[in-house]
Image (cartoon, one colour):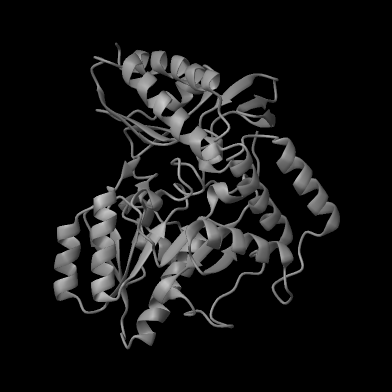
Length: 391
């Protein structure tokens, strides 16, 4: 059967009709355990009663008015996010790459205001910041960039989590105005920078008057057991980007500013037609409310630790398993070989998982996953991995 969707995704041969909690159901009524949460999006799983009710009521009241007018829900969500992040300003958009695009524009405008003619942003290898021209140029993955040259200039790439390399750039490149990095690289294979690295980077940025910009699109919104992954280091960034899990499935992105980044954007500098509309912001507010009322920060930390422990036990001594690593409910199982076919093998067994960076099986379950579901996920996945590795 041919459809008219542009051929941009290698989709798996399954379509889901409905979901409940951490379960999805296909057209044949078969049940699947969701270990991906729509790629770290469905924070509250599927069909969460409080989210369904809030969105239904909001749709009946008001979906969109535009930023020509005040939007109460956007004001409320901006206040909540600013309080949780200890930051000052919030710009709403619709996706992670748009949030990162806003951060890059903000850094450039900040640079020009500092008298830098060609402002540059330091970015890391193996990073992923999006697929717009600027954000794919910032991304440290050649596959994402190939065929879309000329890339946007103004990015200086350094090895992952290498503070020495950043110090060298600081010594010789007067055009740098900001550093952009993910506290936990999701697409890059679940690699976290250390709290010490973040604190050292904060010190360099303070000394050089650079903006410290954290991309929390995948690792933010309680996924690592704290509201935002950078909070594991105690630092305060100047810019933070959010999206994915913030709306539990309704598209929303946000770019937050604090410190030297506050007040850089003025009316006319940036905008988004759909950004911060009442529906998206109601999704955001409800997501934050449920995370707080159900204590999903503690849940993400505990379930993530449990899944990693159970995986290490189940895969102990299996040749071909390099490492199991995780930070809350961002979990990677690195193998010593390409393992894309594991995704289909797991699907056949009723499990939704993903492979990123060619050799890393990635788990990003909903934050509402129960202990029993976590054990079910592991006991289903371990035999698939063992079978794939011929163990």
